[in-house]
Each structure stands twice: as structure tokens, then as C-alpha cells.
Length: 615
DNA sequence: TTTAGGG
DNA sequence: CCCTAAA
Image (tube, rainbow, N blue to C red):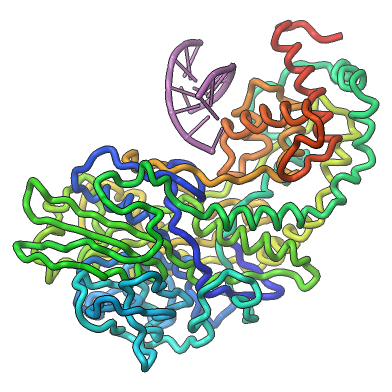
């Protein structure tokens, strides 16, 4: 979560594909695989996780206190016909404060018109229901749909496919976010707003800070006893073109916005969320089925309701595809298919002097953060949070009286964690010339830092105020600790007191918890900055201590695992060995590649000749 | 959980 | 990036 100042842009309806997150981080094509098919809540959670959606609390007029993500995003609604007003009362807050947690309903739609389309409907807090393909609710002429109560965040979708979409609430007076949700193009989506909040952002560059020599904190354990000199000599021997070059540092001068742009482009292109082959075997539809239609059926009790065309929106900004529930004890499968969904509304704060490239990147990060990982899916049943993951749907009563079972999902941050980066200063491998390079960060980075600084001043979050507004929690065994007040209130994006580095830290983090589904992580190319950080860390720690490398240089980059670093190193070595013409992707400065080779050579020797030192 | 490598 | 055998 980042609370930024400067220029504020809000992006409405930035459409993104559903990106389920697996154990670690990610986005991108991914696979959602279901291993077991029991209809447990857990399964629901996973499915739900596929469609994430955040609700950006946007109504806080007080910029200083603006907190994004304090609301969990409620999205998927299954067979919910009744308004949640009654229930929502318990967690509703007049000022949009975090008291109401995720369970509040943003709007309730009752889709009854098959085949009708709804576009740009329902924008609560900037969230939009995305009507794509067929089977979407038609937006009502009067535009009611898009007027939703800001405080209510869950969109309920009726399973039946008949009727007219209609909002139950219409409190929001936001108009700005109206119907501009189609494309993520900056022009179309940005609209200046002021002093508003923040959003999650990923920490692509966090490592950078960690990389910089700072007070020690060696969690990594003892560093190799490598004589500084010898190291130097090693690299020096190979270099002259290696170490020496670094003093120029020109490599960082290159505007990496280019890379960023590519990155964005690439990202957008790889938004494809799942691996078709693995996605939800039981269902007939594939992830590629972008149209948001749902052929699911709801079957509570004995009555079956064909949910053809029930698609509609998934909560706040997601589109749901299909669902199916059976009552029986044997054949009861509940199927959900959540297609793409839109990112609610992103607020970006960026200095006027920022470059377009950095803006793009910022947006990218914001989106990434939102779709990233660390999300926790909550299941709401009749407005109450179901916390026992082990209960079956039946036990929970979800597959019974359809009238009373309003099932909803919400996304919320797992828990916030801020890990100050650490980095030991002595580099056994490099000489000071390197430090110079390292310290010289790319423009974009600087920009970011500034941004962070700014936000730092305004990132005060009040989780405290989350006390009572909580949902009525269905008393269950599991997850209690994790889902108590704190986390509940924090909703998707909590903004803890931030500091430069903390900002970079992903606001929510969670552990993989649904082993049933595995999704491929989205590809996230290493930026030059990251490569630099990696190189530096490896120079210092060697090639066999990825965990330490991770801790030292990428501790805050949750999306980079030590395995990733190891893999990256592997590719870097390879890259360094091939001709520049053969290299692809963002160009890594030759200087860095040289260092890679040098370090690789050095540490290889160290490894082979155990305690022996090279040269 | 980490490493180390192949895929 | 993923998957895994080993450690």
C-alpha cells in the first residue's frame, strides 16, 4: 500500500484478467489446478481467489487518512437475491471507514435478464462490474447500477438468470468513474483527482534499496571468508573491462523506461491468467473463454436454477462465469469460473516531473500489486465470515436453502508485514568502484523513492478503527488468529506506517494455502536494477547461497524467491556468454554481465576448491 | 527448507 | 518459470 501525494491519478476500471495467485507471488498465465474435488470451502476460496478484486476505499475525503484497501473486496456472489442491507448494517460505516470490512455489499444485482448486457455498471468506489461477452447484466437506463453505496462493497449476483439487474443501493455519488473502464490506456483512465490514496504496489525495485550497503544485519550468516584482495584480483584479471567499467556507471543512466514500457506491454499481454490445461478440470469451460458467461447452475435444495447467463459481475469488478451447486451429498459440485475482472480504481501519486515511463511503471506496479499475491480469500455466508476452512459446503449450509444462502467472497490481505531490508556491507568480491555504481540508481528508481518519501508522510493507517464494524464471524476453528480484527479491517490493502523501504514492501502477504490450485506465476523479467542487485549480492555471497542472496538483496521483493534468483543467475551467466546479438529482453549492461562472469568464475573456483582461494 | 539442475 | 530429487 502506498499512499502517495503529488499528482494523483485514479484509474477506473482498469481491466485485468483474473489472476489467481499461487503460493508465491504472481500474475500472469497461471494454472489453477484442482486436485481434490470435495466441495469444501477451501475450494471456494481458491476459486474465488482466481478473481481478485480490490475495493479501493475512495470516499475518504480526508486525504491524510485515506487508506486504500482497508476494505476487503467482496466479489463473487452466488445466488444471492436479497439485499444485504440488513446485514450490512452491522459493518457499515458512514464514512467509509474500515470498519465495514469486506463483507459489506457494494451493490447487489439481481440478474434476471438473460443475455442482457451491463456495461460500466456498478462502480462503487470506482469498482466496476465488467460486462463482457454475453450474459451480463444490462445496465439500466437510469444508470442505477452504477450508483452504488460506497460503503457497501460486495456485489451480489443472483444466480438466476432472469430478471433485471438492479442495484440495491445507490449511495455513491461518484460519477467520475462512470463508464470508463474499458481500456487500461492511460489517457482514458487517468483523471486527476486529488489527495487521495494509495494502493498497493509491488516492490519490484525494493531490492535496490536492500542492495545498497546498509547497516548490517546478517541473517545470512557468516559470509565467506574471501579475501577482498583476491577477489579483486580475480575479477581484475578478467577485467579491466569488467570491474573498471563500472566506474562509469553510465549503464544506469539509460532510461529504463524503455524497459519498463516493454515490461508493461509484456505484462498486459501476458495477463492471461490460467493455464488452460490445468484449470479446473471438472469444468468444461476453459480459461480462454473470455466471454463472461456462466452456464453454471445453482441448485440449492431441490430446486435447480439455471444460471445461464448469470455472469454478471463479480463483485466489484470481476466478472463471474459459472457456478454450479448441487445439494446432494454425493454429487454436490460447485463450480465457479471467474473470468477477468477489473481493478477497481487505482490512485496513483506521482511527481509532476516523473516521466511517462515511470508513470507507466507505477501503474503497472499498482496493478501488479493488486493482482499480485498475498491475498486471502474470505468466504461470506449470509454476511458472515466463514472461517473454518475445513467445513464442507454442506456443513456450512451453503448448499441448502438458496434463499438464505448468500455466498460471497472477498479478498483481503493476508497480513501486513514490513521487513526492513538488510545488507551487509562488505563485499568480498567487489571493490569500491562497484559501490559507486550500485549507489547510483536509475532515474526511475529515484523517482520512486521520492514518491515513497512523499507517501511516507501520509501513510497513516488506522487499523484501530476497525474494531466493531467487523463481520459477524461465524465461529469456527480455523483461521481465527489470522482473521481477527486486524486483518479483517485491513481489507485488501493496508497501509501501515511506511518508511521508504516499507513502502516497497508488499502490503499483504500470505502463504500458499490452497494446495489444490496451483497457478503459474506471471513472468516478471528482471530489471537491470534487479540484475545489478543480484550481481552484487552474488559477488558477495557466492553462487551457492541463494537464500542468503535473497535475504540480502531481495528480501523485500516478495515475488523473487531464491529459486528465482538462482535461475536468474543461471540465465545471466548464459546471457553473458552469448553474443549481444543473441540476447533478448531488456538489455543488461555489458558491465553487469562481465561481473556476472567474473563472479561466476570466482565462486565456481571457490566451490571446487573448497577452502582454497583462487589465484 | 534449500540446493542444484533439468525441463 | 516450473518441477524435483537430494540434502
